[in-house]
Image (cartoon, rainbow, N blue to C red):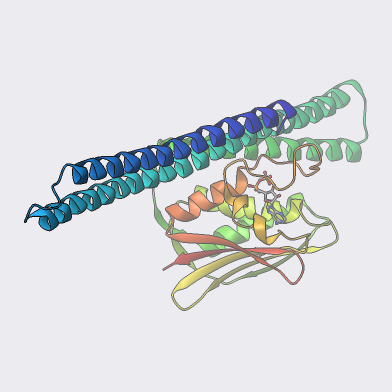
Length: 323
Ligand code: ADP
């Protein structure tokens, strides 16, 4: 959050607490003055009674009854008001905070997206210019081309994520479900990752012939995002383990890595839109904070649930498809 924004948030918070305290103090003051009025009216009415009159005790009792009723009414009304004020205050406070967090995350997202778009474009341009201007050996040419293809692939998956997130959000994406061979899909996705990352170690335990009712493209994005994160957030020399297996009444897909893991307090937040652990200035891994948000959305659309647990070292993301 920028200093300007932080200052504004502090100012708004101070004004908010001041107004809230003022309203509550005014309410208490209102109660005390009404109660005093009640006392005064009661004593005035008592003074008007004649103590020698035979109905004095009954009349006085009536006056006290009236006083008690009024006190009850003030307490009831005051408590209802106070309750409503506190409920609305909590509601407004949480909504404003959420709005502030979202807008600062959106700003981070814009920074990240700009960076994410510019880097592959710059690398691709440089590679193509090199290929155009210089006569390179076949091997060097192939290296440049495969590097360029990787950058284009990154751009492609970034665009897919952004487009899909907005389409799923507005409901303009129509999911067409059918029986998908999840085993074949997982094999293909892992195969592509192996090809693009020959230096990384993959362990895959993919059970054969497991079928899920859903949309292949979305399931592919779900698997791709989880594997991409595992690669991105773990050291090069560690393994990424992908598992697809059938259990009693569900199918489990999981991706485990041996990276730094995710602190417990961040475990639920990482699925929020644009959320990234740490802050944009210190973060080195590329990303937009959309990947896991999409995974959660896709899982939700497929009668599935996505969770994150601690691995022995690192983390393991698990998707449970209920069958
Ligand atoms: P992005 O990777 O584009 O930042 P994601 O939504 O995929 O966005 O992930 C949100 C955040 O969760 C990441 O910024 C990262 O801090 C954390 N995260 C996701 N996957 C892992 C993982 N396998 N290991 C450690 N941290 C992770």
